[in-house]
Amino acid sequence: SSPPPTTTLTKKITNGIQWLALTYAWKEFSKYLANHQSEAAEKTFVPASYYYDDDNTFFDNTILTYGTDALIGIHMTYASYQCYMEGKKASQLQLQFPLGYKASALFASYAISVFSGAYAHYTYHDVDSMNTLSFRLLWTLCVGTVTIAGGFMGMCGSDICKFFDGDTITNNNKPRRRFNTIIGYLNDGYWWYYGIFMTVICIMGEISYKRPACDIFVAGTGQFLPTMYCELVLLSIRWKDAIPGLEGSLSSMSSDTNTAMAKLVNVQRKVRLLFYIGFALNAPLLPGYPLLVQYTNLSLGEVNALLHLNLTFAWGMQAWSLRTICAIVREASCSQSSSSSSSDVNSNYVLIHRQGGDDGGSVGLQEKKRL
View 1 (cartoon, rainbow, N blue to C red):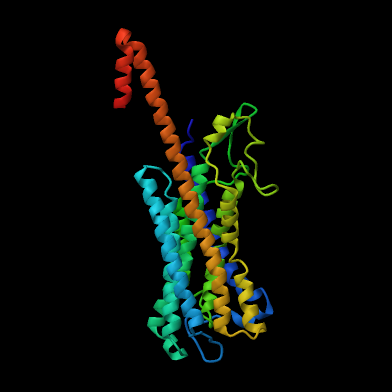
View 2 (tube, rainbow, N blue to C red; view 1 turned 180 degrees about the horizontal axis):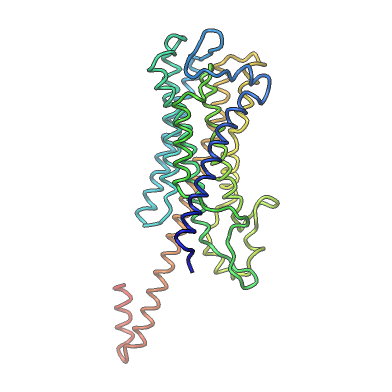
């Protein structure tokens, strides 16, 4: 029996309040962590609220920064297109798996961010030009698309969770979830709120610093919750080729036949590894940036180019792994549909053959060709 409507509504309200509190708490922690992680960070992450001065403001205008930004933007535009096409193929097959569209939105956000960043680094050369409305709007776009991307990232994890949570395996004649933890599905509403809340904080100037690049790092820190959700979702699924000590094994926990096991979608280990690495690879950027600018002789352009290289690998792995997961699910669904259609045709042929009397063979053959 289903729970009373009042109980369901109360649970939704409670979950919503908890999510609001978690989102706000993480926003505050991201700001605190930025300038309390080290002495170098305290010197680097100086709050600005979009007001810049000659003493603390540093903004690189070399091709090492805006050139690498533009290259990443081209890469992310192509990644967004590829993921969109995967989403379109899934829709054409009436497959309820919109991961391709969510991933496309994620990488489109990244593309907008780096393209607007490239234009800002190329155009604004002094503090006076940075203390203008045009710079604030442009830089808000650059940082705000990173904050909203956190919502799209969480939606990607939710789509993966929802798809694989429908799988059950048999263990000691009892059906069990394919997940080996209690991690659950979060609907898109939660992630919309998360992304929009972080973006409003960006617009208000709460994550604005004298070094504008710092805004991006704090915005990226705000992606910790959706990043960990994506990581934990994939880690929690039992796989046929599980990584020992890291993932749950599908075969060791199931007494299903090989035929039943074959129907379960399996994402190859290589894809999962790149997924895990890609979503975690940006973590060193927050502590790394202040150390590089305070304790090395590298120019600001060289530091930016080095961090952009890391960003290229991280986002590239995210894009490739998400698009590949889309393709694997789609191809598995096509294979299962083909097998099901073939079984239906054979069943219809046998049935007609048995009902056809003396002419059953010829009637059955004709019906099989028509089907």
